[in-house]
Image (tube, rainbow, N blue to C red):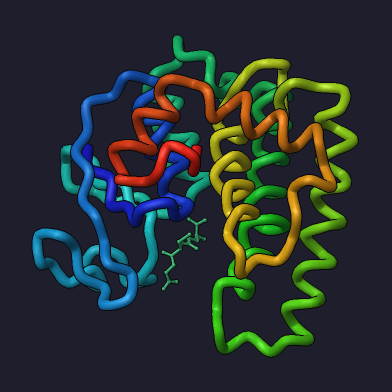
Length: 207
Ligand SMILES: N[C@@H](CCC(=O)N[C@@H](CS)C(=O)NCC(=O)O)C(=O)O
């Protein structure tokens, strides 16, 4: 398998899950500004949507979208315990979390990264994020992880996007949610997370 990634982007979530399950995989870095891969390939040809992550399978098929990739990887390693069995109610619960992270958190960060986003829109995005993190704070005050009291694929995704709260342009302070902060640190301490962070050339502090 090969994962197309961009350092510190949401592709870090499948990256660290590939390490957690012990998969053999290659990494290929994408320059998202010019849409070229490290090997010089035109990234538009790899993903016509123009964004990471992309997981390329050994038979050449390509899978995009974090919730799909995370589930696919974990399902290849059912003994990893990173996702409940397909068809079980717990699996739908995890899908509920994945959808929450992707639509309510991940995509609310996106306009805060863009210089072109109007100031008023950024204020609204910050308010929305604060509301969502307040909800997560309540959950994480009572639970160690999002689902099942053990680390799973939805945690990997939430961990990666929550790291972005440390970027100065975001303008939302994680200190308001101490249980979210502790949760992030708990996941950052996982050896495979440290490995993934280092492999992407990020500072240890990013984890
Ligand atoms: N819906 C996609 C969104 C992926 C996404 O937003 N990727 C960002 C990095 S976090 C990206 O590559 N953006 C580049 C661009 O849109 O030009 C998913 O969940 O996988």
